[in-house]
Length: 433
Image (tube, rainbow, N blue to C red):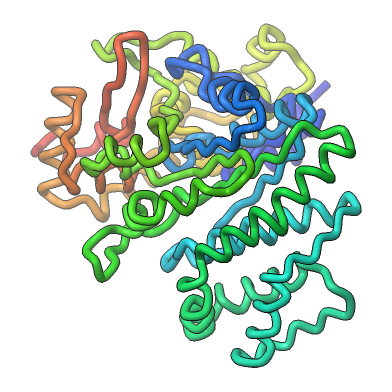
């Protein structure tokens, strides 16, 4: 059986998120928990299962592109097997990530929850939103055109207008922000609590909301001087955690290095769960053979989803001209999932398998050159320090190194450590600082 090139290409598209609940896509999933230091999804799951009837609010973070969405969908799958009703959504589809407030997030959650409830025949009519729709129609002149009351349809229309119009967004906030307390009460008492009761009648144990992609919100500063992530999760975090259901928010990785980790932990009752990179080396510079082997399986599973790990390796020569080419691809990614797929997909755009080493090296050069364009002299010097010490400081400049994916975080039995993106380690600039 030869490689289905079209299927292989589609499976390697970098933006593709693997949904483990789909039996076909489940074949692409590789469990990296054994090399990431812990099974973060198991910890999130156990917290929900052991919380009984008490709502819990957890934070989940990691580098953008490290596989958080795929892991959250794994959490959704596991929770649904435990008979929970799970609402998963990508918040950046509802929100302008450059300008977000708490009322925007609460509105998005209300929309997504109501939408999934309506899909299974649970229709609720919270008076708070009836009043909100009346305000929007009369004051903002936004026609909702709802022939029969559907909560999710009305909120979707409002959210769309607000996302694409700063003027509408500010007018809506002027109405909603002073009423945030009332909005929270309404969501809890008029939406979540009745929904949970109806869900339990259908045999469900509870309601879980997984809010993905909030880690992508811009790090802009508010008039108070706080960054947008600090404002949302520290200054307004008390409101975000007050929903009467189980919630998991993704949060920007920079919060862990802003000097505000202790206040954040106190606010939410536990530290954010961090999904680190898959290690290709150990802290001492030696090869991390298990990490490399799992990354190889991630690549080969895209080509041979129906085969087991051993059979995939036996047929690797059909995908790469030599085992060393596959090894090179995995090492240069630094264990960053999306970068691994970017490099693989770029190779497939240039030629059919087997991918030759020269093609891969050309793709790596282009990838590396794009990274170096925006690196400042100060950042090169700091990266030299990170590479030598395997640690970072709390200053904002280090946050920027993490945000731009110049530096990665890893975890092992000895704890956390940091290193420079392998693509940058090979540059002339890094070598000559």
